[in-house]
Image (cartoon, rainbow, N blue to C red):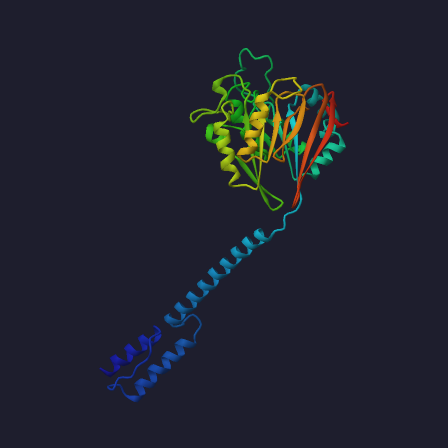
Length: 363
């Protein structure tokens, strides 16, 4: 019986339980049990279970505490990040016509398309946005009864990258020149190139989505809409691709209000107006002001292919048309529109440009 008690004592000791003495155990048996327990406690890897459990719990708490501290530090870094001046640069209609491609190919690079001053403005900007007035696709069927239809093979996407384009709007009257394949293939090419896009999608949810970017300690949102397209089926719906239509501005205004709740600064890029007219239509003025009232901080217009004026409404700029930027053989007047978001003020600069033979330069 004594031997049995001793064995039980040793087993309990090895398991981390306290060693107890039975009145039936002799002094030699008790000393033997204590000795075995002390020896086991001193061997690496033979720690009592209770001690291991305590240390594992402590290590777990330390790891969790360290992870929480890291997350808290990261959040504090974001919150404490000092806002710096943020430069947003915008241009108008972009189409890589044969004139542009020939200029690019002759020079062997983007320097054949844009002059050094423009390239430097783009390089210095935190973000550069244009209207992509064509699809990247080599598929689809040409739109019937349409005077001008545009498209570029997807492999030419590298020219936009070299140009420094960060984001495009696809909400225009040419993105579906060769059918819905134009939207599908354009989005694929842009995504692979790392260029953001708004204004069109495989369905309405995608087309109306606001793209947000974190810049200079701010969250900046971009929304693309169009009031110019060929037919009703060009407008995105729940079941088919298209552009985000603003013929009825109700849905666009709703998206602007929702977006403004999530961003510090909101840009709406809209396709509207009448080609070759240098003055905006009354509906453009009304709609632009509605956008501002709904929460837009800046409205940029395209489609007329010529410059239209800029005005301020409630202290915020509405640019009715920036005209063609990179397009055909001759562009008498266009401009880069630069806006600098400062800590306490917003600064606007208009940079006049011109273009001939597919080469755009500062005036």
